[in-house]
Amino acid sequence: MEEIPQLKVSGKDMKHLPCINDAWLAIEHDKIVGFGKMQDWEGIADWTNLTVIDATDKLVMPSYCDSHTHIVYAGSREGEFVDRINGLTYEEIFERGGGILNSAKKLRVASEEELIESALERLNEVMMQGAGAIEIKSGYGLSTESELKMLRVIKKLKTLSPLTIKATFLGAHAVPTEYKNNKRAYIDLLITEMMPAIAEERLADYCDVFCEQNYFTKEETIEILTAGKKYGMTPKVHAEQLSNSGGTLAGIEVGAISVDHLEFVGNEEIKALKDSETMATILPGAAFFLGLPFPPARKMIDAGLAIAAASDYNPGSSPSGNINFLLSLCCIQYKMTPEEAINATTINSAYAMDLSKTHGSIAVGKQANVFITKEIPGYSFIPYSFGSNLIETVIINGKVI
Ligand code: NIG
Ligand code: FE
Image (cartoon, rainbow, N blue to C red; front, side, top):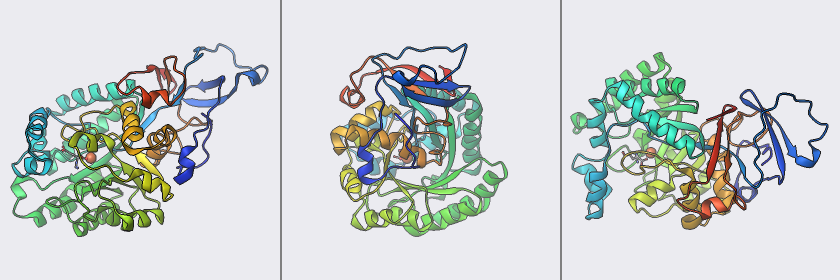
C-alpha cells in the first residue's frame, strides 16, 4: 500500500486502496523510510546491516487504528449478555441499575494496578490482532475520584504499551445512581470539578458524551462539550445509537472530531455531516452484539461521506477489539467493499483521533506500525475469512513484537 496523501478518504475514493505487488518496505528506527517495487530495489538504497523479513506471498498492511474503545474496565458483564438472550433489552438492563452502572460499581472498587493489568492484557491482545493506535475512554467512574483514576490508568498505559494511545473523558456516560434525581448537579460536577482537575493533570485529549434518551439530551451534550473545549478537550459524541436523539447535530455544532454509532442517523444528519469536518464513525461490533439495526453505511458513503469504523471494545455492548472481524461485519452486514472497510479502519479511524498525519497508511515518514499476514491471496481474504487469525508478524514503532 502506498501513500494516501489525504488525511481521510471520502465517498467514492473509499473504494480505492493503493497497493503494490512484489514490493519492498524499509523501516529505520520507528519510521517508514521507503517502499517501492522489488524490480526498482537494486541500486536505490545503500543501506547496510539490514534485518530482512521475507514477506513473499504475504500482505504488509498498515496497522489498524481503533478510534473508539472503553478498554479500561473492571470485571465483565456476561450475566447481562444472558439476560438479553432471555429477552431483556439493553435499556431495560440499564433501568434496573445494570449496564454502565454495573461497570461503574465494579470499577469504583478496583485498584489502579488491577485496572492497568487487565487493560494491558487486552491491549496486547488487540495489538496482536493488528491494532497500532487506540483511543480509550473513561466513563465507568462517574465520580471525580473514579474518573480521575481511570484517566490516570490510561496515562500509565501510554508508557507501558507500545501502542499509540489517545485518552477521552467520558464522565457524561450515564448519570450515576447518587445523582439519579438530580442530573443538573451531576452536569455541574462534570464541568466545575472534574474538568478542571483533568485539565490540571493533562489527562484527556477528548471529551465525549452519551447523547441518548435516559442519558444526556442534545442541549446537555452541547453544554458539556462546549465546557470541555474550554479545558482543551476536543469533542466526540456517542450519537444516535438507540434512537435519533440529536447527538450528531450537537457534535457538528461544537466541531466534534467524530460522532460515533449512528444506527438511527437520518437524512438531515447525513447532509450536515457532508458539510462538516466531523468523521462519521460506525461501531459494527456494538450493533452486532446488541442486535441493533445497522447504521446506513452504504447510504452515507454513497452520499460522499468519509466513514470510519472502530471496535467500541467494552464489557457491555462490544466485548471484542478484533478489527479483522470488524472488517467482516462491514463487508457482510453493511455491504462495504473490502477497500472501504480497510480505509474505514486505517486512515479514516486515524483521522477520528487526530493521527492521520502519522498513522493509518504506509507512507514515508509515518510511524512504522504495520503487520504481515500469513500467505494469503489478497486483502479481501481477511474479511472473507471471518473469525480466522491471519496475522503472522506485528511491527510497532519499528520493532517486531
Ligand atoms: O459505546 N453507548 C454507550 N456506551 C457504550 C456501552 C457501554 C456499556 O454498556 O458499558 C457503547 O456502546
Ligand atoms: Fe462507546
